[in-house]
Length: 325
Image 1 (cartoon, rainbow, N blue to C red):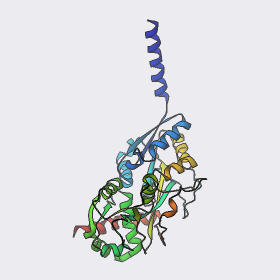
Image 2 (image 1 turned 135 degrees about the horizontal axis):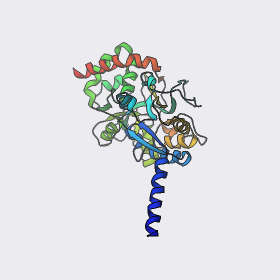
Image 3 (image 1 turned 90 degrees about the vertical axis):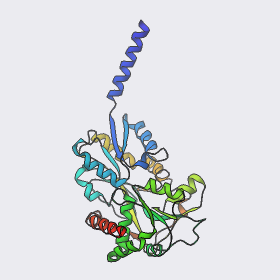
Image 4 (image 1 turned 60 degrees about the vertical axis):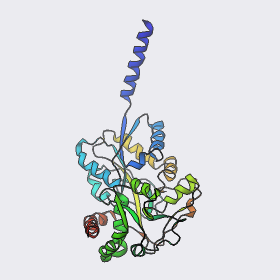
């Protein structure tokens, strides 16, 4: 009888303790929480310091995350959103609270009262250098070739939107013609990066829209030097990924602490070799060996957040029109 009462008491205590543990809800993209992604490491690292539980919710790729947040509105459970980029921040800003700025080592100035950067990179077309010996040297060169590519949908994916802005930044009024020329190279348009890259690795295309840093994964994690990013003469469009605290957060102090943790050396080091991007703030130990082999774009392209918002709808319509012909 005493044993039964003791067991019941311990169970009640455990249930009460669990109920008293605050929960931080983080909305992010699918690959962030994959077993090989940064999510599991960041969750364990932050939980070790916060006395809380981190729960991730995913919504496809970065642009889909914003769509999910808008759809949920005031009913959203998200305290923190991780994985928007500066092409989406102007549209997302009304949904977010002000946050404290954090130091960074980004190659361009960053100032946004609603968001903190956590990593960055350059978009690029990745290929297998054991199969493609002479890669294209520009987007126009790619469009003139017979190479088959996989890209992501700009309406749901931040890389997909990044490509549209890359084309617009590089070709301006000639973007529509470029898309018409490129249309017959496109094997398929996927909802997000994970699907596109998986298809490429499965041999379904010659090249895939990804990042200049993607070959570092294969080199460092798999000791495989067969993947390269093509260097394009018109330059490469940058992506700066950000995180922010929602206006509807029920755990604002925990949200602030999590954003600060993302900027720590521990988190930034983890992001380099799990999200395979450059860190927003280079950790004390620097970049891992292997990153020095990556291409360095001759020119960096990037619209401001306001410019990207103004261009976005017309660029998507231009892209849809070209691909529907």
